[in-house]
Image (tube, rainbow, N blue to C red; front, side):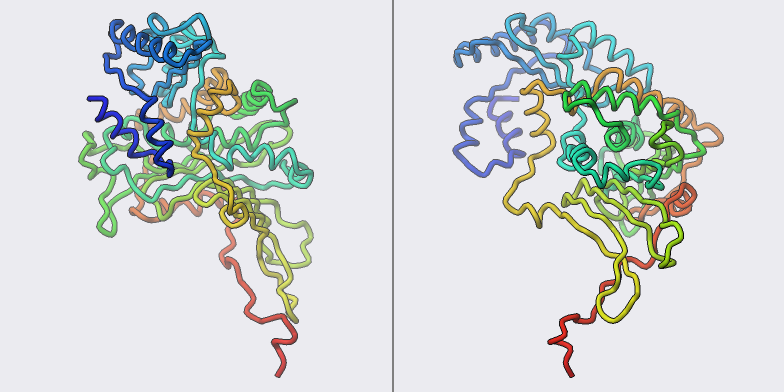
Length: 446
Protein backbone atom coordinates (compact mmCIF):
# COMPACT_ATOMS: atom_id res chain seq x y z
CA UNK A 1 0.00 0.00 0.00
CA UNK A 2 1.40 3.38 -1.01
CA UNK A 3 1.33 6.50 1.19
CA UNK A 4 -1.41 7.95 -1.02
CA UNK A 5 -3.51 4.77 -0.67
CA UNK A 6 -3.03 4.96 3.09
CA UNK A 7 -4.18 8.60 3.23
CA UNK A 8 -7.24 7.77 1.11
CA UNK A 9 -8.14 4.80 3.29
CA UNK A 10 -8.03 6.66 6.62
CA UNK A 11 -9.48 10.02 5.58
CA UNK A 12 -12.66 8.55 4.10
CA UNK A 13 -13.88 7.89 7.66
CA UNK A 14 -12.82 11.18 9.25
CA UNK A 15 -15.79 13.41 10.13
CA UNK A 16 -13.91 16.72 10.40
CA UNK A 17 -15.82 19.50 8.61
CA UNK A 18 -12.91 21.94 8.42
CA UNK A 19 -10.82 21.12 5.28
CA UNK A 20 -7.80 23.01 6.68
CA UNK A 21 -7.72 20.80 9.79
CA UNK A 22 -8.04 17.70 7.64
CA UNK A 23 -5.16 18.83 5.44
CA UNK A 24 -3.03 19.57 8.50
CA UNK A 25 -3.72 16.05 9.75
CA UNK A 26 -2.67 14.56 6.42
CA UNK A 27 0.65 16.38 6.65
CA UNK A 28 1.45 14.95 10.08
CA UNK A 29 0.52 11.32 9.47
CA UNK A 30 2.72 8.74 7.76
CA UNK A 31 2.69 5.06 6.82
CA UNK A 32 5.42 2.45 7.32
CA UNK A 33 4.89 -1.03 5.89
CA UNK A 34 6.32 -4.17 7.45
CA UNK A 35 5.79 -7.72 8.72
CA UNK A 36 4.28 -8.61 12.08
CA UNK A 37 7.08 -10.99 13.04
CA UNK A 38 10.14 -9.32 11.50
CA UNK A 39 12.55 -7.28 13.66
CA UNK A 40 13.75 -5.32 10.62
CA UNK A 41 10.20 -4.02 10.08
CA UNK A 42 9.95 -2.76 13.66
CA UNK A 43 13.40 -1.18 13.42
CA UNK A 44 12.22 0.63 10.30
CA UNK A 45 9.17 1.82 12.27
CA UNK A 46 11.41 3.02 15.11
CA UNK A 47 13.53 5.01 12.67
CA UNK A 48 10.41 6.72 11.31
CA UNK A 49 9.24 7.56 14.83
CA UNK A 50 12.64 8.94 15.83
CA UNK A 51 12.71 11.10 12.69
CA UNK A 52 9.29 12.48 13.58
CA UNK A 53 10.35 13.21 17.17
CA UNK A 54 13.45 14.99 15.93
CA UNK A 55 11.47 17.04 13.42
CA UNK A 56 8.98 18.07 16.11
CA UNK A 57 11.81 18.74 18.60
CA UNK A 58 10.07 16.57 21.15
CA UNK A 59 11.61 16.97 24.61
CA UNK A 60 10.29 13.57 25.74
CA UNK A 61 9.59 10.42 23.78
CA UNK A 62 5.96 9.65 24.57
CA UNK A 63 4.81 6.72 22.41
CA UNK A 64 1.40 5.09 22.04
CA UNK A 65 1.14 1.74 20.25
CA UNK A 66 -2.42 0.88 19.16
CA UNK A 67 -2.90 -2.80 18.32
CA UNK A 68 -6.10 -3.05 16.25
CA UNK A 69 -4.93 -6.37 14.82
CA UNK A 70 -5.97 -10.01 14.41
CA UNK A 71 -5.69 -11.55 17.90
CA UNK A 72 -3.33 -14.24 16.56
CA UNK A 73 -0.58 -11.61 16.16
CA UNK A 74 -1.05 -9.69 19.44
CA UNK A 75 1.90 -11.40 21.10
CA UNK A 76 4.47 -11.28 18.24
CA UNK A 77 3.66 -7.62 17.56
CA UNK A 78 3.98 -6.74 21.25
CA UNK A 79 7.32 -8.58 21.34
CA UNK A 80 8.53 -6.73 18.24
CA UNK A 81 7.53 -3.39 19.76
CA UNK A 82 9.28 -4.11 23.05
CA UNK A 83 12.54 -5.26 21.40
CA UNK A 84 12.78 -2.56 18.78
CA UNK A 85 10.50 0.43 19.42
CA UNK A 86 10.08 0.70 23.20
CA UNK A 87 11.76 3.82 24.55
CA UNK A 88 13.35 4.16 28.01
CA UNK A 89 13.44 7.96 27.62
CA UNK A 90 9.74 8.71 28.06
CA UNK A 91 6.41 6.88 28.27
CA UNK A 92 5.14 3.81 26.42
CA UNK A 93 1.43 2.98 26.23
CA UNK A 94 0.09 -0.16 24.58
CA UNK A 95 -3.57 -0.11 23.53
CA UNK A 96 -5.08 -3.54 22.89
CA UNK A 97 -8.40 -4.11 21.10
CA UNK A 98 -10.68 -7.03 21.96
CA UNK A 99 -10.99 -9.98 21.81
CA UNK A 100 -8.91 -10.55 24.93
CA UNK A 101 -8.87 -14.31 24.43
CA UNK A 102 -11.65 -16.83 23.90
CA UNK A 103 -12.01 -18.09 27.49
CA UNK A 104 -10.25 -17.93 30.86
CA UNK A 105 -7.27 -20.00 29.74
CA UNK A 106 -6.52 -18.14 26.51
CA UNK A 107 -7.12 -14.78 28.18
CA UNK A 108 -4.73 -15.64 31.01
CA UNK A 109 -2.11 -16.72 28.44
CA UNK A 110 -2.42 -13.42 26.57
CA UNK A 111 -2.23 -11.55 29.87
CA UNK A 112 0.94 -13.34 30.95
CA UNK A 113 2.66 -12.73 27.60
CA UNK A 114 1.79 -9.03 27.48
CA UNK A 115 2.57 -8.65 31.19
CA UNK A 116 6.08 -9.98 30.60
CA UNK A 117 6.68 -7.16 28.10
CA UNK A 118 4.74 -4.17 29.45
CA UNK A 119 3.68 -3.14 32.95
CA UNK A 120 -0.02 -3.10 33.80
CA UNK A 121 0.16 0.69 33.94
CA UNK A 122 1.39 0.72 30.33
CA UNK A 123 -1.43 -1.53 29.03
CA UNK A 124 -4.82 -0.15 27.97
CA UNK A 125 -7.37 -2.87 27.13
CA UNK A 126 -9.91 -0.88 25.19
CA UNK A 127 -13.65 -1.61 25.21
CA UNK A 128 -15.27 1.18 23.23
CA UNK A 129 -18.52 0.89 25.18
CA UNK A 130 -16.72 2.38 28.17
CA UNK A 131 -16.19 5.50 26.05
CA UNK A 132 -19.87 5.99 25.20
CA UNK A 133 -21.42 9.10 26.71
CA UNK A 134 -24.24 7.39 28.60
CA UNK A 135 -21.97 4.66 29.98
CA UNK A 136 -19.60 7.32 31.29
CA UNK A 137 -22.66 9.04 32.78
CA UNK A 138 -23.69 6.07 34.95
CA UNK A 139 -21.45 7.05 37.86
CA UNK A 140 -22.75 10.64 37.81
CA UNK A 141 -26.35 9.44 37.82
CA UNK A 142 -25.75 7.05 40.69
CA UNK A 143 -23.46 8.97 42.98
CA UNK A 144 -24.40 12.62 42.36
CA UNK A 145 -28.18 12.21 42.91
CA UNK A 146 -29.46 11.31 46.36
CA UNK A 147 -32.85 10.23 44.97
CA UNK A 148 -31.38 7.64 42.58
CA UNK A 149 -28.64 6.56 44.96
CA UNK A 150 -31.17 5.72 47.67
CA UNK A 151 -33.31 3.60 45.31
CA UNK A 152 -30.37 1.74 43.73
CA UNK A 153 -30.68 -1.63 45.49
CA UNK A 154 -32.78 -4.79 45.89
CA UNK A 155 -35.03 -2.89 48.30
CA UNK A 156 -36.58 -1.02 45.37
CA UNK A 157 -35.24 -2.59 42.15
CA UNK A 158 -37.00 -5.77 40.98
CA UNK A 159 -34.86 -6.55 37.91
CA UNK A 160 -32.32 -4.99 35.57
CA UNK A 161 -32.17 -5.49 31.79
CA UNK A 162 -29.17 -4.54 29.66
CA UNK A 163 -30.08 -4.84 25.99
CA UNK A 164 -28.11 -4.69 22.76
CA UNK A 165 -30.00 -4.92 19.45
CA UNK A 166 -28.68 -4.70 15.88
CA UNK A 167 -31.07 -4.55 12.89
CA UNK A 168 -28.61 -6.30 10.54
CA UNK A 169 -27.01 -9.73 10.40
CA UNK A 170 -23.39 -10.73 9.87
CA UNK A 171 -23.53 -9.30 6.31
CA UNK A 172 -20.41 -11.00 4.97
CA UNK A 173 -18.67 -11.29 8.36
CA UNK A 174 -20.05 -14.74 9.15
CA UNK A 175 -16.64 -16.38 8.82
CA UNK A 176 -15.24 -14.13 11.55
CA UNK A 177 -18.35 -14.09 13.72
CA UNK A 178 -18.68 -17.89 13.72
CA UNK A 179 -15.47 -18.17 15.74
CA UNK A 180 -16.89 -16.05 18.53
CA UNK A 181 -20.69 -15.92 18.67
CA UNK A 182 -22.83 -13.24 20.26
CA UNK A 183 -21.78 -13.93 23.86
CA UNK A 184 -18.05 -13.45 23.22
CA UNK A 185 -18.68 -10.64 20.74
CA UNK A 186 -21.02 -8.51 22.87
CA UNK A 187 -22.19 -9.87 26.23
CA UNK A 188 -18.96 -10.98 27.94
CA UNK A 189 -17.35 -7.59 27.33
CA UNK A 190 -19.63 -4.68 26.41
CA UNK A 191 -22.71 -5.61 28.43
CA UNK A 192 -20.78 -7.00 31.39
CA UNK A 193 -18.82 -3.75 31.60
CA UNK A 194 -22.09 -1.82 31.76
CA UNK A 195 -23.37 -4.22 34.43
CA UNK A 196 -20.28 -3.67 36.57
CA UNK A 197 -20.87 0.11 36.55
CA UNK A 198 -24.57 -0.34 37.34
CA UNK A 199 -23.96 -2.78 40.20
CA UNK A 200 -20.67 -1.70 41.80
CA UNK A 201 -20.42 0.01 45.16
CA UNK A 202 -19.43 3.65 45.51
CA UNK A 203 -15.65 4.00 44.98
CA UNK A 204 -13.66 5.92 47.57
CA UNK A 205 -12.74 8.48 44.88
CA UNK A 206 -12.84 9.07 41.14
CA UNK A 207 -9.28 7.79 40.83
CA UNK A 208 -9.05 5.16 38.09
CA UNK A 209 -7.80 2.41 40.41
CA UNK A 210 -10.54 3.11 42.96
CA UNK A 211 -13.18 2.73 40.26
CA UNK A 212 -11.65 -0.44 38.86
CA UNK A 213 -11.29 -1.92 42.36
CA UNK A 214 -15.06 -1.71 42.83
CA UNK A 215 -15.76 -3.17 39.39
CA UNK A 216 -13.59 -6.17 40.21
CA UNK A 217 -15.32 -6.66 43.57
CA UNK A 218 -18.77 -6.79 42.02
CA UNK A 219 -17.71 -9.15 39.21
CA UNK A 220 -16.32 -11.53 41.82
CA UNK A 221 -19.80 -11.63 43.39
CA UNK A 222 -21.31 -13.15 40.23
CA UNK A 223 -21.42 -16.94 39.97
CA UNK A 224 -20.78 -18.64 36.60
CA UNK A 225 -23.88 -18.41 34.40
CA UNK A 226 -25.88 -21.62 33.96
CA UNK A 227 -27.31 -22.92 30.70
CA UNK A 228 -30.70 -23.13 32.48
CA UNK A 229 -30.62 -19.33 32.80
CA UNK A 230 -29.83 -18.77 29.13
CA UNK A 231 -31.89 -18.48 25.93
CA UNK A 232 -29.97 -18.91 22.68
CA UNK A 233 -31.07 -18.19 19.13
CA UNK A 234 -29.94 -18.02 15.50
CA UNK A 235 -31.69 -15.93 12.85
CA UNK A 236 -33.23 -17.42 9.72
CA UNK A 237 -34.28 -15.85 6.42
CA UNK A 238 -37.35 -13.60 6.37
CA UNK A 239 -38.78 -10.88 4.12
CA UNK A 240 -36.04 -11.30 1.54
CA UNK A 241 -33.21 -11.11 4.07
CA UNK A 242 -30.83 -14.11 4.24
CA UNK A 243 -30.46 -16.32 7.29
CA UNK A 244 -27.19 -16.67 9.20
CA UNK A 245 -26.34 -20.01 7.57
CA UNK A 246 -26.71 -18.38 4.14
CA UNK A 247 -23.81 -15.98 4.75
CA UNK A 248 -21.36 -16.64 1.91
CA UNK A 249 -18.32 -16.29 4.19
CA UNK A 250 -19.60 -18.96 6.59
CA UNK A 251 -17.69 -22.21 6.08
CA UNK A 252 -19.75 -24.41 8.41
CA UNK A 253 -23.25 -24.43 6.95
CA UNK A 254 -24.47 -26.49 9.93
CA UNK A 255 -23.14 -23.98 12.45
CA UNK A 256 -24.85 -23.80 15.83
CA UNK A 257 -23.21 -20.50 16.76
CA UNK A 258 -25.79 -18.28 18.50
CA UNK A 259 -26.53 -14.87 16.97
CA UNK A 260 -28.86 -14.08 19.87
CA UNK A 261 -28.52 -14.70 23.59
CA UNK A 262 -30.43 -13.71 26.70
CA UNK A 263 -28.80 -14.73 29.94
CA UNK A 264 -29.39 -14.03 33.60
CA UNK A 265 -26.82 -13.49 36.32
CA UNK A 266 -27.09 -12.60 39.99
CA UNK A 267 -24.82 -10.37 42.07
CA UNK A 268 -24.51 -12.17 45.39
CA UNK A 269 -23.97 -9.29 47.78
CA UNK A 270 -26.02 -7.29 50.26
CA UNK A 271 -27.14 -4.66 47.75
CA UNK A 272 -28.29 -6.94 44.92
CA UNK A 273 -29.06 -10.40 46.31
CA UNK A 274 -32.00 -11.93 44.44
CA UNK A 275 -32.17 -9.24 41.71
CA UNK A 276 -31.86 -10.76 38.21
CA UNK A 277 -29.59 -8.94 35.76
CA UNK A 278 -30.87 -9.93 32.31
CA UNK A 279 -28.29 -9.44 29.54
CA UNK A 280 -29.71 -9.59 26.00
CA UNK A 281 -27.91 -9.21 22.69
CA UNK A 282 -28.74 -10.15 19.13
CA UNK A 283 -28.19 -9.53 15.45
CA UNK A 284 -30.83 -9.19 12.72
CA UNK A 285 -33.43 -7.85 15.16
CA UNK A 286 -36.22 -5.33 14.66
CA UNK A 287 -34.32 -2.17 15.62
CA UNK A 288 -31.00 -0.67 16.67
CA UNK A 289 -30.94 -0.07 20.40
CA UNK A 290 -28.66 -0.31 23.41
CA UNK A 291 -30.18 0.48 26.78
CA UNK A 292 -30.22 -0.23 30.51
CA UNK A 293 -33.66 -0.66 32.09
CA UNK A 294 -34.11 -0.79 35.86
CA UNK A 295 -37.62 -1.94 36.72
CA UNK A 296 -38.77 -1.20 40.25
CA UNK A 297 -41.09 -3.23 42.48
CA UNK A 298 -44.84 -2.85 42.42
CA UNK A 299 -46.16 -0.32 44.93
CA UNK A 300 -47.08 -2.20 48.12
CA UNK A 301 -50.80 -1.86 48.91
CA UNK A 302 -51.28 0.19 45.76
CA UNK A 303 -54.43 2.36 45.82
CA UNK A 304 -54.43 2.41 42.03
CA UNK A 305 -54.53 -1.24 41.05
CA UNK A 306 -53.15 -2.19 37.68
CA UNK A 307 -50.77 0.77 37.43
CA UNK A 308 -47.48 -0.18 35.75
CA UNK A 309 -44.18 -0.43 37.55
CA UNK A 310 -41.78 2.51 37.55
CA UNK A 311 -38.77 2.14 35.27
CA UNK A 312 -35.54 4.08 34.90
CA UNK A 313 -34.15 3.77 31.37
CA UNK A 314 -30.66 4.79 30.26
CA UNK A 315 -30.60 4.77 26.45
CA UNK A 316 -26.97 4.38 25.38
CA UNK A 317 -27.72 4.56 21.64
CA UNK A 318 -29.17 5.82 19.40
CA UNK A 319 -30.24 9.27 20.61
CA UNK A 320 -28.78 9.23 24.12
CA UNK A 321 -31.39 9.72 26.85
CA UNK A 322 -32.31 9.12 30.47
CA UNK A 323 -35.99 8.82 31.29
CA UNK A 324 -38.13 7.74 34.23
CA UNK A 325 -41.44 6.04 33.57
CA UNK A 326 -43.94 6.85 36.32
CA UNK A 327 -47.69 7.02 36.92
CA UNK A 328 -49.71 10.21 36.86
CA UNK A 329 -53.33 11.34 37.09
CA UNK A 330 -54.82 11.90 33.65
CA UNK A 331 -55.30 15.67 33.23
CA UNK A 332 -58.87 16.90 33.36
CA UNK A 333 -61.94 15.59 35.12
CA UNK A 334 -60.86 11.96 34.98
CA UNK A 335 -59.22 10.27 37.96
CA UNK A 336 -57.70 7.57 35.79
CA UNK A 337 -54.01 6.81 36.36
CA UNK A 338 -51.88 6.86 33.22
CA UNK A 339 -48.22 6.11 32.56
CA UNK A 340 -45.96 8.97 31.52
CA UNK A 341 -42.28 9.90 31.80
CA UNK A 342 -39.71 12.44 32.86
CA UNK A 343 -37.53 12.54 29.76
CA UNK A 344 -34.01 13.90 29.29
CA UNK A 345 -33.25 13.27 25.64
CA UNK A 346 -29.84 14.68 24.85
CA UNK A 347 -30.39 15.82 21.25
CA UNK A 348 -33.41 17.88 22.42
CA UNK A 349 -31.96 19.31 25.63
CA UNK A 350 -28.26 19.75 24.76
CA UNK A 351 -28.74 21.08 21.24
CA UNK A 352 -25.46 23.04 21.13
CA UNK A 353 -23.21 20.30 22.51
CA UNK A 354 -21.49 17.67 20.39
CA UNK A 355 -21.05 14.19 21.83
CA UNK A 356 -17.64 12.78 20.83
CA UNK A 357 -17.22 9.35 19.33
CA UNK A 358 -16.41 6.68 21.94
CA UNK A 359 -12.97 6.04 20.46
CA UNK A 360 -12.22 9.75 20.36
CA UNK A 361 -12.95 9.96 24.08
CA UNK A 362 -10.91 6.86 24.95
CA UNK A 363 -7.86 7.81 22.90
CA UNK A 364 -7.85 11.14 24.75
CA UNK A 365 -7.94 9.14 28.02
CA UNK A 366 -4.86 7.21 26.85
CA UNK A 367 -3.00 10.45 26.15
CA UNK A 368 -4.01 11.70 29.62
CA UNK A 369 -2.84 8.44 31.21
CA UNK A 370 -6.33 7.87 32.63
CA UNK A 371 -7.14 4.16 33.07
CA UNK A 372 -10.68 4.69 34.42
CA UNK A 373 -12.39 3.47 31.26
CA UNK A 374 -10.06 0.58 30.46
CA UNK A 375 -10.14 -3.04 31.60
CA UNK A 376 -7.62 -4.13 34.25
CA UNK A 377 -6.07 -7.63 34.23
CA UNK A 378 -7.87 -8.93 37.33
CA UNK A 379 -11.12 -7.45 36.04
CA UNK A 380 -10.71 -9.43 32.82
CA UNK A 381 -10.03 -12.62 34.77
CA UNK A 382 -13.18 -12.16 36.84
CA UNK A 383 -15.26 -11.51 33.72
CA UNK A 384 -14.08 -14.66 31.94
CA UNK A 385 -14.78 -16.83 35.01
CA UNK A 386 -18.45 -15.85 34.76
CA UNK A 387 -18.82 -16.97 31.14
CA UNK A 388 -16.19 -19.64 30.42
CA UNK A 389 -18.18 -22.70 31.67
CA UNK A 390 -21.23 -21.63 29.63
CA UNK A 391 -19.14 -20.92 26.52
CA UNK A 392 -17.42 -24.32 26.70
CA UNK A 393 -20.81 -26.00 26.98
CA UNK A 394 -22.10 -24.13 23.91
CA UNK A 395 -18.89 -24.81 21.95
CA UNK A 396 -19.21 -28.55 22.59
CA UNK A 397 -22.93 -28.48 21.68
CA UNK A 398 -23.88 -30.38 24.82
CA UNK A 399 -27.27 -32.07 24.80
CA UNK A 400 -28.86 -29.38 26.99
CA UNK A 401 -27.82 -26.59 24.58
CA UNK A 402 -30.88 -25.64 22.54
CA UNK A 403 -30.54 -23.05 19.75
CA UNK A 404 -33.91 -21.51 18.90
CA UNK A 405 -34.54 -19.90 15.52
CA UNK A 406 -35.98 -16.46 14.97
CA UNK A 407 -36.93 -14.50 11.86
CA UNK A 408 -34.63 -11.80 10.50
CA UNK A 409 -36.14 -8.47 11.64
CA UNK A 410 -38.07 -9.88 14.61
CA UNK A 411 -37.61 -9.16 18.33
CA UNK A 412 -35.77 -12.48 18.75
CA UNK A 413 -36.91 -16.01 19.59
CA UNK A 414 -40.61 -16.28 20.41
CA UNK A 415 -39.60 -17.72 23.80
CA UNK A 416 -38.03 -14.38 24.82
CA UNK A 417 -41.14 -12.85 26.42
CA UNK A 418 -41.68 -15.88 28.62
CA UNK A 419 -37.97 -15.97 29.49
CA UNK A 420 -37.83 -12.39 30.81
CA UNK A 421 -41.21 -12.82 32.53
CA UNK A 422 -39.89 -15.90 34.33
CA UNK A 423 -37.02 -13.80 35.64
CA UNK A 424 -39.20 -11.03 36.97
CA UNK A 425 -39.74 -8.51 34.19
CA UNK A 426 -43.33 -7.29 34.01
CA UNK A 427 -44.25 -5.93 30.58
CA UNK A 428 -47.07 -3.40 30.50
CA UNK A 429 -49.02 -4.14 27.32
CA UNK A 430 -51.03 -0.91 27.32
CA UNK A 431 -48.12 1.36 26.48
CA UNK A 432 -48.36 5.12 26.84
CA UNK A 433 -51.87 6.61 26.65
CA UNK A 434 -51.70 10.31 26.01
CA UNK A 435 -54.81 12.36 26.93
CA UNK A 436 -56.60 13.99 24.00
CA UNK A 437 -58.73 16.49 25.94
CA UNK A 438 -57.46 20.07 25.91
CA UNK A 439 -57.31 21.03 29.60
CA UNK A 440 -57.21 24.78 28.92
CA UNK A 441 -60.65 26.02 30.16
CA UNK A 442 -60.75 28.82 27.60
CA UNK A 443 -60.49 26.28 24.82
CA UNK A 444 -63.29 24.07 26.15
CA UNK A 445 -66.17 26.57 26.14
CA UNK A 446 -69.37 25.55 24.39
